Image (cartoon, rainbow over all chains, first blue to last red; front, side):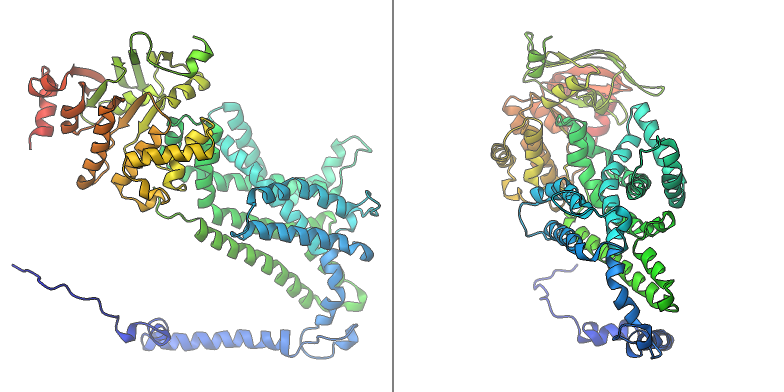
Length: 366
Length: 258
């Protein structure tokens, strides 16, 4: 028999188990074999990183205006610098660039407002972002009203076009995807079969095919003279394609919500749209943030495919610049720049989604 | 029946809150409810017990149409239950339900769980809904947890919140589907206490439960079900002391026998 009369007081953990040195010892040098692998790994890392830094920074040319200024071994960033405006704005008239800047600056402000938790009036900002903003943005960019000169969409390009395609695609694909996912689970046979056919059709076709069809075949079916803008056609194609993917991601989330949640909402007298909008979807979407952002990221990168229907997105315009006879031979610099730009945007989305997951985590599943 | 009368289900002239006549239900080929006849008067407290799979949960889930019956008639507060979605929602507004696994909404705080239906279904202003919710949360003695999320509460606390959430809709009938079966023993009492208080206040209740102590204390009638049918129905005292059917005797000896 044991009886404890005095409780044991709490004491600090031994020194060897906390701190940077302890971490190194536990994770990198926990034994002779692991120590060898750690050193080997560091050496391989050095082999990889050193030449990259050498090429991209130390030996690179930064100043100048023509290819003659690129005399050193490393990267010729002069090329990117001279073409920078074109990479960002495409063939948009130089004197009208302020219009693009205004649109993107105001978009950045709106998105930041929505993304930063402390700021008030979220609901109104969201409404402005989704309804009046896209319309105003279109007219500012396209012009033809209020004395703004017309800028046809074939002059739009570069990062600007990439962002337009991606943002419109994301904003439109999410609600359509939600409706398709709900429809696919519907008990109404017509709604259900429509959604299944729609999703399976668009998922089964490569995006390139969709874009080709949008640019080549669609005009054949439309009456002559009834031209739909090429950019609009690409946008519709991308949106429909992505909404099918989105629908399946969201359906996965819907299936993970216990049936009892909908039953409890039903027992309180809520109708279908309340049950979905207030109870099931908020939980499902929260759970599916990684999947949704994954789809967004792949959409963002897929926008480069519009190149094949003659729209010059960021990658397209970089590639076009590479064939300029004055700047031949700098394709590596061009592709590295395009890759970095894409990476920055995709990585930001990824980080924000992780932040969002932590913030929305009310913990503890039911 | 006019829409006006249908929108506010109350006991009809006989004082009947729930009537089931010749109700039959099948899951595929499985005949889960067989010729159920049941009348519940306003203010009556009924306990339904029976072995698992006997159809007792299915029976009360038919009353607010969480399960669909194929034959027979169900009338709740004078309103016949039909396939009509609006009619079903009307009936659900006057029938509260408490589930075995609580089914609180994990993404909403305790207070929001209680306010949601009054605000969206009954279109009450937020302020009024919150005052109402706090009033009921106090009644189930959990008002101090109002801003927490369900995942931060114990099972017993969650179930009391679930009861408060139902009460916020001012139901005429409360259905309890094994409300204490998922709870640790030390938490069962706090939930039963709330249910006993509710019973003493005159709430019409149908409880599926194995808590025989609760049945003895508050029930007006105890119903024993087996194989989808009502085997025995009696006041608690004769039901427990002098069960008539062999099945009831066997069941009672099994659950009270240790």
